[in-house]
Image (cartoon, rainbow, N blue to C red; front, side, top):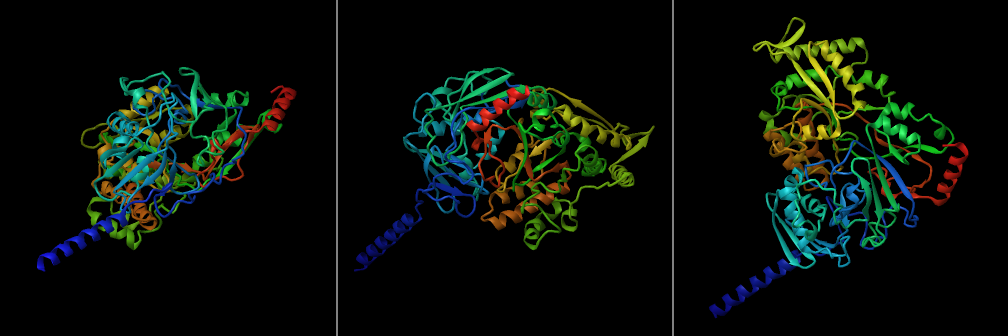
Length: 612
């Protein structure tokens, strides 16, 4: 009897284990969210911010700045052409009216256990490359292995915690993860561009190429002239055109990008009707640059589209690999010499708000002093982070008038003296070595000179020799990729769901990786820890708390002299387009616009009548 009882006990335990495993098995779903549930249900027909009956046809002409010499945007080498994202599809795609949810694109379903330790994608049987070949699990695995080994540095950081990739079938692949909780990783894997293994095998993936690659997206390259223009043709046979995630999108028959030397030349080309749509990033031009006949006659529209996204951080970025900028007191001192208030009055027509956070314009931005929940995170790191994190609320220096600037410069000089700098022959020099304080601000467009030069004049009052150098786009990209600069203007875009990209922005592992986004050269174990905590945040509340803690530590390290932001997109366009009735929280979506036949005909008639 004892043996029988033992057998029944073992059998019962085995059945219980199997039932538990069955209960834990992930069910296939159409979408996944970073936190909570996706907005759109299984049977949704289209996103709310598109017009599902938008007509197809016409051409949209846009501008690009600089040049291009490659059609491979996935590697460091070369300058990729604008618009190449239209060629390459991913396993999933995001909606623009949620913080971070993804819906099946190449993947028809997604399976993910509750602990997010793995994710499996089942591919759509109709998914095809432009050459007609089906997209298979082999293509997915090849894409992952190639991008991680040979692609831009961020792929290595994004995929660092992928422990195993398995082919489960011709149309199914599973990624298993290691390295602790990483709720974002299944979504990041889904964003991976899928490459054609048959096309890329036997080619040098890391080389520049002007051979149009085989993709799987809604557009193909129709024609181009290297460095001058590129035209994309909508693929009438695009396999995904009827999917709910694509309905009402990709309406233009052609997309043309013409390249211009700089934004000033590009604006004049827009006025001359050389292209149709112009996002405007220069406040002065938005305020004063569009008073021309076509705008006065109503042929051109200027619209500000609201958005509810973090502003991210734009600013003068220090290269802390340079000995000159390794002392945080020096970096803080130079921030006192940047007079934002003067620039806003005299250059920006008062249109901008000073940026005070890496996540400004969102609930992720740090505010006041750390909360009790933040302190639980920050206290164990106290000896590795600036003491101001615990005692002060960060705010960039303010100079409302000449007297305010003098006060700021006095404070700057005090910090510089504390850091070992002194005056000699009206120049700031190192008290020990006699080295003059001099550095170069590297720019990629003349537009930035009008912001950098007043900053340089203020630095001169401190005895600092700062020069401004504007170079062409190819040289600029090469120097930034190799960290060959003292100071640049850099932008770190942020989403409502920050995660693994923060490793490439601030992670120690990215600091010495050419082409990475850690242009500042941050190597700080406390910041590494905070980034890991952001990535592992189990819910929205903890993400907010952890992002705010990271924000404080970044701000008080003075890696950046913050610039400014606006809570809307500025777009000027020739009035031939139809626009959706809804602008989503992430801002205007140009891929949901269309050419309105009646407006297009009316514009052509009015152009002819006005001589435009």
